[in-house]
Image 1: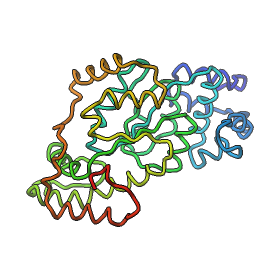
Image 2: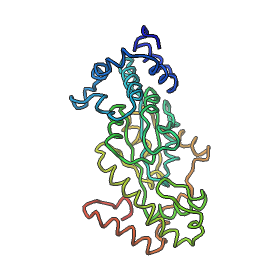
Image 3: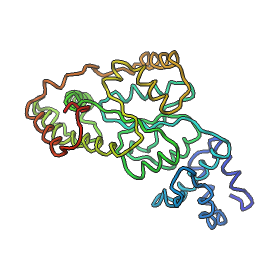
Image 4: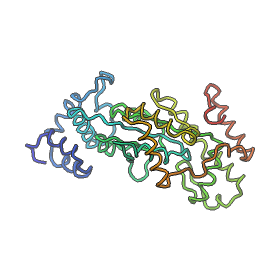
Length: 309
């Protein structure tokens, strides 16, 4: 990048959809003046509703510098141009109808499904988030809550929606999924030998190895004060009402007819539930049930009723 090119020119280029690699290369090619003034640049991008002592330098501490610069440029562009699109993080348990729900939301006017990770990662990638930040999107992720995730939510004004399900039903759905998808899941490594076990034995493995991830997910997102919680049963039984709640929370200007059209479009694309039945977990091996109940007992002050406990 030539020394005479202004940060405004670069920001406009980013707003017009320049690729991450192109932007990164421009930033790497000798923009010494911008780097020397980065602290003043970040300080000018403080949010009025954030803590006064914080700016992007401290908020994204530890992130690669070029990613922080990219984020700063996109944020400043959005504010300068008055761009304020609805952005949703659908933080979800596996086997909770998250693909269906995300697709429905992505079909709403002005919205799209977008990934915020690279290579099937489980954490938000700042550079990819920055590149998506000028558009309306929903991102479906099996992600834990953390201080870094919370900083992304605040800085980019992302609405967190947390999708959960009855854990006993999860065991059955996960058991079937593992057999159909050769052990693929984000919570634990399941071997081909284990998949050959009878249902009751595989359920015990799921209770021991997979379900702890669900407890960590649930307990972590309990720390997010402004999250909208959604249950699998409601997505299955009344998706229109669920999407209406999400649209209201995220300020998506849609009506019931547009919501119904988005749901129909998802259904026509084959985005349906795998089995779509509640209560299947009643038949799991009693030993697996006992293991899950014992885990919940370690947190006597937490209300796990929404998880079937």
